[in-house]
Image (cartoon, rainbow, N blue to C red; front, side, top):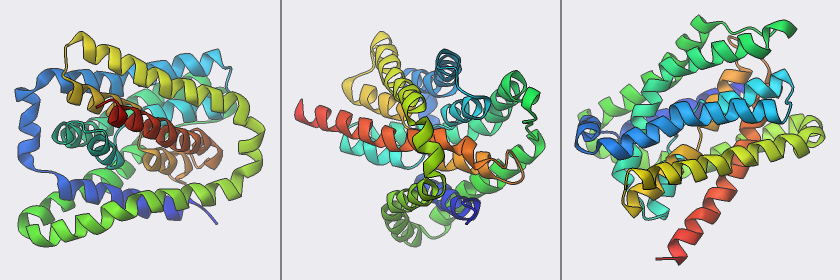
Length: 282
């Protein structure tokens, strides 16, 4: 079974669900609360990919895993971050705004960063990135579903609310199903590389949490904003990374998606522990 035919509809549904929760006025919060948003976007779009590049070099990852690690670091957000922010008593409105903004900005940053990364480590072994196909796929699978979700919300708000309740409950089970199928198909490769790659991915998540917390304190975000920034920077959109890695129009390499699978598993464990600690410390 080719997992691309599973991940594409899952990603589309998740982005549609994100659109259902968005309001155009959410984007106005950028100007009313610039520092929390600026810190989070810096962490998501610049800091995390830079850390991933450094760790990939430090751990001497193979080119395929190197590109895969940077790819998951370039795919922030996802609707799950909003749920985690709510559980951590964070600023949910800030979380929704950040997810929306980063989803749009990454339509432009992912092609730039991944093109550079592929040229750096991939072209010598025949890995190339068709940038045009990447942009087209992101527009169809990410931007279009978000816009449709926003449109449904404004046209039929009650229907949108009911649909959002159903899809938000399906998000985690769908991702878990995808990860399970992927693991069954690639368990040998995952187990053979779990030591080095697992340590590298864990380091990436912990550094994301630590650096985003430090940056939030430097700009004096309040506790709720700080918790949200930590979750937004640490939580990545694994479905998007898997879709890019395994798509026959782009990399067509499911092994490249393994860092995203490991990140998704470890990310949820580590951030659930973080949420538990924040709830106990209240």
